[in-house]
Length: 229
Image (cartoon, rainbow, N blue to C red):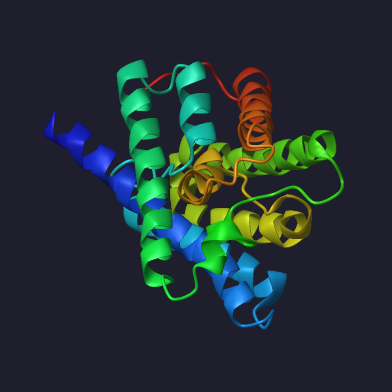
C-alpha cells in the first residue's frame, strides 16, 4: 500500500512539474514577445520529460500521461485501481500547475484570459480532424519509446530519459505551431481547466489515446511475447 501511495504521489509531482515547465514555457514565449520560439518551448518539454523519466521511473514508471497509463491498463500491464488513481493524480497535478502559473503571472492577467491562455493547447487553422491526427501520430511514437525501453526490455530502461526527452522535444517542435504540442491529455487539461479555454478539448484526448492504443497494439501483438508482470 505504501508503495502505491508513493507511486501515486510521484505521478502527481511529475505531471505538476511537466505542466509547469511545458505550459510555463509557452507563457514565457508570450511574455518575452516571442524570444523563446518553438525551439525553446520544445527543448523545455524535452528536458522536463527526460528529467522526470530519470527521477521517477523506478517509483511509478514516470508515466505522467493519461494516454500512457490507460494504454498500459488496457493491455493488462497495470491494474485498473492503480491506473484510475494515476490518471486522477496526473489531472490534479496538471490543474494545480496551471493554477500556480496563474498566481505567478497575476500581474499579467491577459496571459490567462487571452492567448496563450496559460499555455493551453489550441489547434491552428488546420482544423480539428487534422489536429487529432497529428496528436495521434506523435503520441504513437512517444508510446513506442515507452515500450521500447520500460516495457520491452528492462535493460534499456536507462536509455528511457534520453529517448523520451528526445521524442517529446521533436514532437513539440513539429506539432507546436499546429496543435500546441500536447501529446498528453493532462498537458492540455490543466491550462484549459484554469483558463476556461476548452476549444476543441476532445482533440487532446481522442488523438493521444488513439495513438497510444495503436502503439500498444503494435508492440503487444507483433513484437512482444505475451508476458505480464
